[in-house]
Image (cartoon, rainbow, N blue to C red):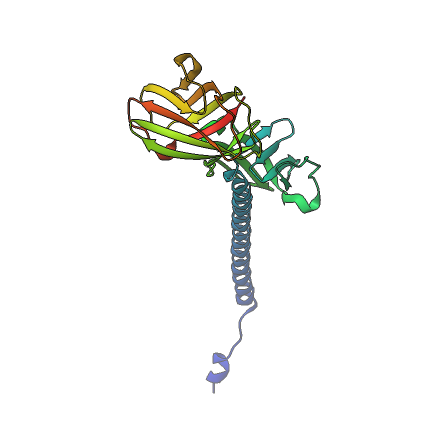
Length: 279
């Protein structure tokens, strides 16, 4: 009698086993390849995010130093060094190799070497520059590039100074400036706070940024000499008015002089400010 139960329980043949192992091996190779691909994608994405975050963080820190500047902003292309000055502080930012260093000083302090580990701002900065040609217009252009291996990110942005009320001078220290609207124009009240008296007859060059002005009809002032057409210059491209004048009386600490600009068109008070006062 045939044993049907024995025939039904026969095992896999060697050929079947080899085929199954081969199929399983091929499947595992595919799975491992997909896992490697996913790992590489995650690693590259993580590096991309990391380099973007490093750039944005470093860019924001330098920008925050600039926005409060009202003394001066300069950039030395040979040393890749920016010097940012406001009334109380002076910031120095310099690129050495791929290390970006930054240090804070008092505004009157002498700058010392800042390339110390505690002053390191970022360590993978490929390039750093500051275009100050529009400082008189109230902004500078900051450019930076960060690179991690083959990954890099770059950013260029205009950074606007927000302290228009505290203006720099090259001999008076700092002045407080109040901008008010008057009939047909704008008036600038400039208060000096040097703690000293500026002598009668001291020559002044006052640069004023005008907001959407039409043709000038007159420029007058109190505490300063009369201003002739020959003693003023308006750059229509930048909107900067330069007035050449002199003090008509001694200018004591806490006192104000005024400059009143009358125009033939409308002018925006919020876009108008004193840029510099110099002799």
